[in-house]
Image (cartoon, rainbow, N blue to C red; front, side, top):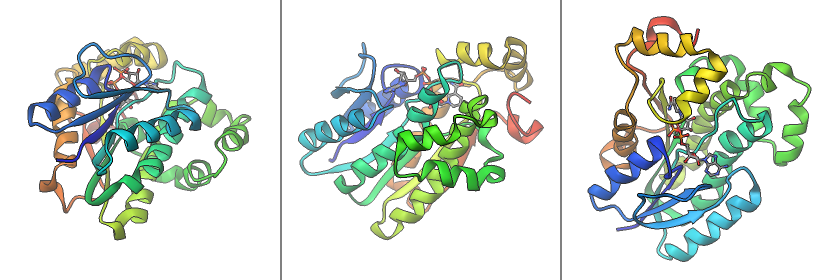
Length: 258
Ligand code: NAI
């Protein structure tokens, strides 16, 4: 059985997804900038915000999985409380970079899952900006090009997740003929450490109110089980799609923190 690469395994949704996959016997290669207390598998400590970090992951994966990999879940992410360059680097270029770097190690039937967010549901309204930004060859030049755009730098998390939705469709089309699937999952607010940052970023009342509206916050399990499904061959006909997992929040009012 070929391994699956997961990022963000040292916390929250990534840590729980690693457990779910390990329980069904999938060999894992985990990536995070922080060490993990619980992860069992090959662990690669790397910073996904830079091309050097992505190159280091690609080299480590090629060594640990000489026969190739069965899939990749891009779960690592940073909230809007981080500097905007970091947010866009990790959430957009980390995803694009890792898919590009690891796709050569994937064969027919492999699956990629990207973590978007239900704040990004209106992504088609900024599709052209996402295309221009997320497909730019030079990461630093792309970041410089939006530095004066307050709509992007002031809402870097929102824009990053809109770009993840864009990239998911784009990469699904790019990899279709190699029979590699690419889907995304868009959670609503889930009880993990990042939720505290969302409260600082969007206001405590709005985030608490979103949880209260649907009865509770999401749990890592709510998301991990959907990621697991999208990585399995049983979901073979699901491709280029996003699955929203937010208790109905976006359906009810268009966006989580509206
Ligand atoms: P978390 O904060 O618990 O875990 C994120 C992980 O990503 C951490 O282990 C962190 O070390 C890692 N990471 C961050 N920057 C990194 C970098 N530069 N290089 C390598 N690893 C890095 O957050 P959670 O909740 O598990 O989030 C997982 C994903 O789900 C993220 O992409 C997040 O944006 C997304 N999401 C989470 C929601 C929530 O309410 N928890 C809602 C919507 C989306």
